Image 1 (cartoon, rainbow, N blue to C red):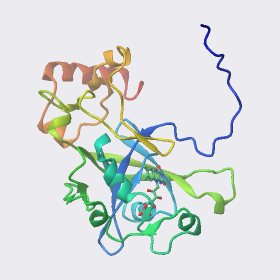
Image 2 (tube, rainbow, N blue to C red):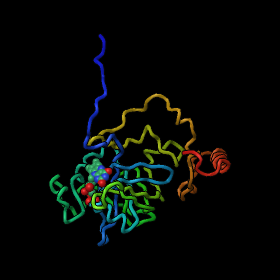
Image 3 (spheres, protein in one colour):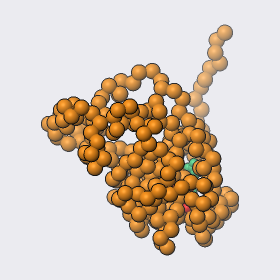
Image 4 (tube, protein in one colour):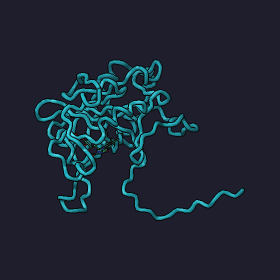
Length: 251
Ligand SMILES: Cc1cc2nc3c(=O)[nH]c(=O)nc-3n(C[C@H](O)[C@H](O)[C@H](O)COP(=O)(O)O)c2cc1C
């Protein structure tokens, strides 16, 4: 039987959240307590992450003021924690728009969610024990979105943070290679159009994956110096290749 024709139509979606990993950001409040917030407008390139954050969030104020945060990545089976944090804010004076959406003020989001803090190595905000991947990060720069609109309408910003320390549970590491995450073991929680998903199993062979991960390295953090994860010969030759190309000629 011929399949039904599938035409494109022009549509006007209110949101364009096509599917990105959920990040729970921990930051430090003004009084020295800590805040948590789920978000998912995040992407990584080299040792940097760009975070899309509403400027009415406590997380935004904390990050701009302190310059520090931890990006904690939950797994697909940690949805219940994220749901306990959803529609909460650390801002006492809730913005009218958020109040209409049903947001409530929560001072202690670790208590509210049942997640547990664990000290970070380089910065003050704590990591979340339950998250298999935790990235300590510092603020580099922030850029208002909607620069084409009047200042009062620029309600969100893209914040560049630099990842200075990465922690990963052994259960998501590639066997015998401490600096590599095994994508067959790592099960990120994905938010797509406000709903939660996991990743399905690995698809057909990826041409991109024929490139050695070490070829992308632009920085060497303490952990990788402490625990080399590839044979020193191949790491060395990759670094030499990068040096020969001049830094950052490819992504
Ligand atoms: C799954 C999920 C994803 C979210 N993604 C974002 C996001 O990418 N950017 C953002 O500003 N808010 C996002 N939010 C909403 C924030 O969590 C919300 O603004 C919250 O009030 C921030 O907390 P805070 O005010 O204590 O910082 C998301 C919420 C959930 C539950």
